[in-house]
Length: 144
Image 1: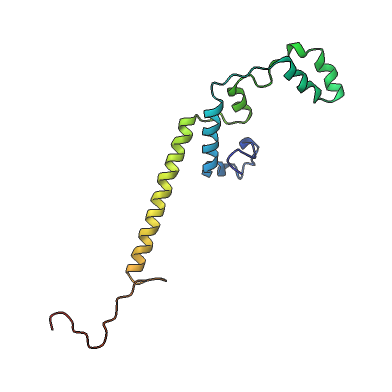
Image 2: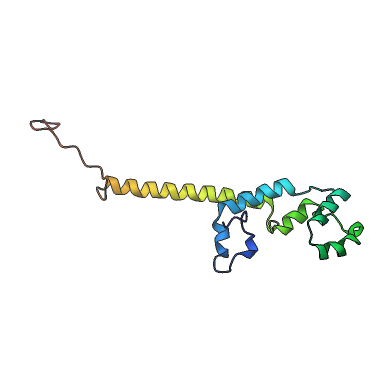
């Protein structure tokens, strides 16, 4: 939801807009879209323009048809597409850097959590603590 795939990031309310920076999907989607669209140029034929005009309502179509030859391609290049989706705020390598940061941070958090849990278990605290094995009756201790 906060990755920019379903909602435009700028359309988020201010009180939840900070959550976009915690979304792994935001940075991966942004890097993927920039990889695909950066440096790409589109060409539009007259048939494409007429198909677009056909989808307009009658009153708008009447105004547009007389100027159809002046209309540029709706999306002339990949940069325009990225700007419209608001995915041009950071470049692909910065997005990949953030993904690497999250990877390392989550690994470190998991390691710290496992280390903390293991130390609690070895100290005999908490559920699942390791208990020393009881000696069977009549077993001799070392040195006897």
